[in-house]
Length: 166
Image (cartoon, rainbow, N blue to C red; front, side, top):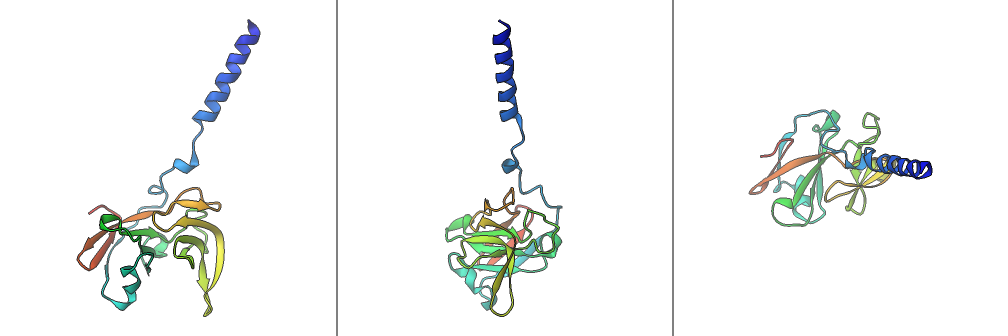
């Protein structure tokens, strides 16, 4: 009988240990960064933003987001309210590191932690985490969460990017 009680106690402990621990992947990326004011417009008719008129096209908006590292605005290729998405350029892994900036990779399907530098556009990785461009979710590397997402509203040929729903 004592052997059965020990077995039951061990199984209960293992069950609780495996099912009660905090899952780092389920932590919201919305609560990770300090609140910052993001509110800007992008005119889709300007040559600077021409790539946003095509699927997988993107534009960087400097001076906004966490530590003013910028925001990536991306055209998912879908129609309707999910056509444009916007993400903070700060990588959630070691967010305060000076190199922890996210850039669109050469395929335009992923974001990577690191920057393109120099006239040749050589990529210099930081933690080299990768994120899906369409939804900002983490797919590889040491980051344990996706990118901080902002809200995008479409007003004719203007996009409004904010940190609050409109």
